Image (cartoon, rainbow, N blue to C red; front, side):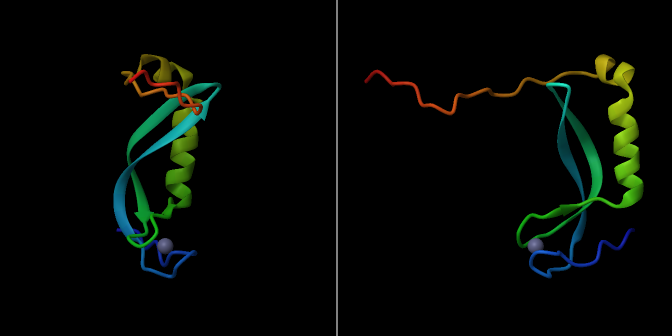
Length: 86
Ligand SMILES: [Zn+2]
């Protein structure tokens, strides 16, 4: 167990959780599952420790691994609402 200390924003003790984190790598959205992080139950602030941060950097540089990884589809919506026919 890593002690994440308190939230910088609201001073609430952070809880250790496995989170899903997304990154944009060269216009490609990459999601990493089960990232150990400290999460603030109050405001949702997320903090990863240095070791985890380094490991994420290694994973994201491994383009071979990214190319072979399973993909998920995500909704893509436009900011400008299209006219809905009633
Ligand atoms: Zn907070």
